Amino acid sequence: MADCAQHEAILTTHSAAETQSLGARVAAHLRPGDMVRLYGELGAGKTTFIQGVAQGLEVEDYVTSPSFTIIHAHEGRFPLYHLDLYRLGPGDLDDIGIEEVIGSHSVVAVEWAERLPSELQGDGLEVEMGFTEREEQMRRIRLRGHGERLAAAVAALAGELDARAGS
Ligand SMILES: Nc1ncnc2c1ncn2[C@@H]1O[C@H](COP(=O)(O)OP(=O)(O)OP(=O)(O)O)[C@@H](O)[C@H]1O
Ligand SMILES: [Mg+2]
Image 1 (cartoon, rainbow, N blue to C red):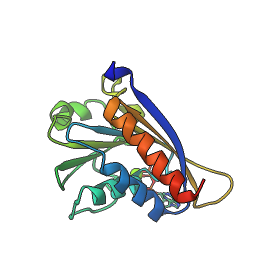
Image 2 (image 1 turned 180 degrees about the vertical axis):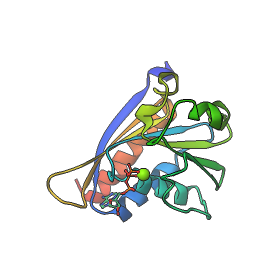
Image 3 (image 1 turned 45 degrees about the vertical axis):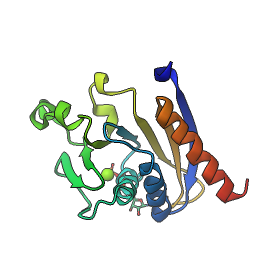
Image 4 (image 1 turned 90 degrees about the vertical axis):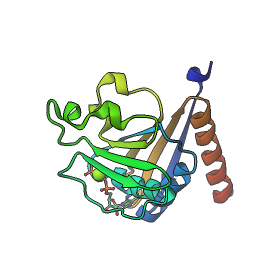
């Protein structure tokens, strides 16, 4: 069954630029209707990763720091909605009309995705980012793709990056 397909890969990056370039590679596999759910503590690199996704989707108007706004809309190859749920208050998602945003015409990237209601969790692409003790600029990034296409995408990305690292 397609909805049972799932693939996970753990990657590391060593700079913000490398995380952005991973985001751009991921973007090549995204289709309208996909949700990218990002997890990880403050400063882990979620926004940095989404900047890369935006580049990959050819968004030209990208501006950073949505900290005080929950949702930012961008136009690229197709619409990209960037949600930051850190300061999510009760009823905010209803105000945004989250169900409409998630429609099949756009990609939605969500920081602090653990704050999404449970019915919006579970499919799409999960990106879990964390610090390491080894290097200040190193991040451990776990990608998990749900469904056949995104599972295959994660497997392909892991393969490409392994090949580049020569392992
Ligand atoms: N390998 C790396 N990947 C991503 N960011 C890195 C990396 N190394 C250093 N950084 C730096 O870490 C910071 C990550 O900040 P970013 O805003 O992306 O985090 P965030 O997870 O979105 O945090 P918040 O929860 O506050 O929104 C940036 O200053 C970035 O330059
Ligand atoms: Mg952020």
